[in-house]
Image 1 (cartoon, rainbow, N blue to C red):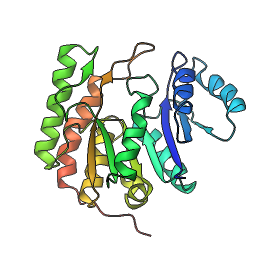
Image 2: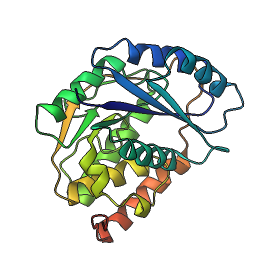
Image 3: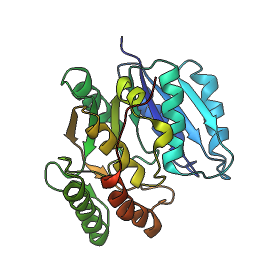
Image 4: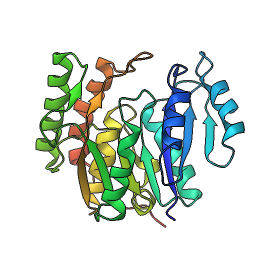
Amino acid sequence: MDRKIVIIPTYNEKENIENIIRAVFLLEGNYHILVIEDGSPDGTAAIVKKLQEEFPQRLFMIERKGKLGLGTAYITGFKWSVEQKYDYIFEMDADFSHNPQDLPKLYEACANGGADLAIGSRYCNGISVINWPIGRVIMSYYASVYVRTVLGMKVFDTTAGFKCYRRKVLETIDLDKVKMKGYGFQIEMKYSTFKLGFKIAEVPIIFVDRKEGTSKMSSGIFGEAFWGVLGLKMRKIKPVQK
């Protein structure tokens, strides 16, 4: 059976973390979870540690000292997962904006559909977002249009954070050269995947804004993505040197 792991970064997610972990573990297919915990003061780590007693072979956690950014959290998780030889490595938010029931769809797109990267896409089948203010929907949608235009990448949801990678993609991308830290990280990883010749597929999902906890979005995150895309256009993307 393919080895599958879901990476979930957390910062102050005590309202969601136990429920999201249990929801993933209820799925068929023996998914594992790696939580990247950035020193949440609300006790998120303690909840995960308690659950590790219940799921010692399936639930793992890396604790970091402080809020170090979404991109570095995923890079940490990617490196650990590659070292542990997982075949399929997923990104997912802790707050149920990504439905765990969609994980098998992403897996199928890679395992049986020929994709190297499967993206849970809000925009490949119209706009599928619930509970966002209209202004944020418009900003997010046109941010993806901007990225697609500048980078020439045929991906509708360029900032999506719900994804499944084949391990070989993460072994090929030079993770130490990934520069963007916030949501620009999501764009950079997709662009690197695209430039290195891997096949990308989008799987339509319905994105539901969080019901519990606080959003981590900020204007600075969008600013980094906007200017970072121009830098990406100029950069040569090379595979990791073995």
